[in-house]
Image (cartoon, rainbow, N blue to C red; front, side, top):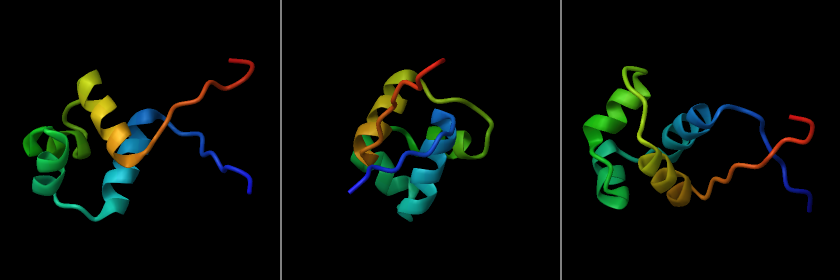
Length: 71
């Protein structure tokens, strides 16, 4: 089976994973330790996430970043 990759900014991949999960901000806060207010602000486009929060979400959702050849 071929692994399918989608090229999108990290922030968009995280927003999609959060939305697609159907999990509440409270549940995500409990699972990741990231304050729900920070998650809500990120999803609304008001703020960015700190790198450690990005790492936690990527691990939680099983996301990984790959290097594009030629870039």
